[in-house]
Image (cartoon, rainbow, N blue to C red; front, top):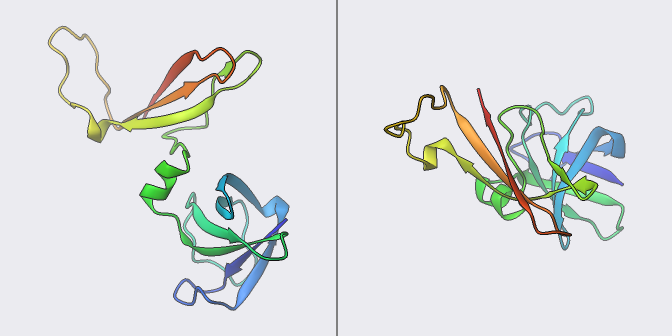
Length: 145
C-alpha cells in the first residue's frame, strides 16, 4: 500500500508525491476512508504538522490512499482514534490489546478539585476508556502533562 499526498496544502488536487507503506501508519478505516499518520514525508512536501492525522480515501487501484485533507476533531472521534497526551498506553486483556471506546479530556470535566481529594491533576489531562471484546471488561488509562 502507498499514500499519495499533495505537495502543497492549498492545492489538495495535486500534484502528489508518493509515500511507501513504511512512511505512514493507518490509524483507522471505515469502508473506503482512512485516517493515516505519516512517519516521514517525501522531499517537496512539508505542509503537514507533526502528529497531524490525515483524512484519506482508497483509490480505485486498491493499493493507494489519497490524502484529501487534515482530519477534523469530529472524524478523530468518529474513527475512535485516541489523542494521547503522552505515549500510547493501550491495556491488554485476555492476551490481546483492548479496543478503544472513547476519550474524556479535562476541558470537558470539572477542573475544580473534589472537596476531600488530596490530589488533582496538575496540568492538562485525558482519560482513555478501553474494553475487551472477549470478556467485556473495561479499563481506563489516565495521562497528564
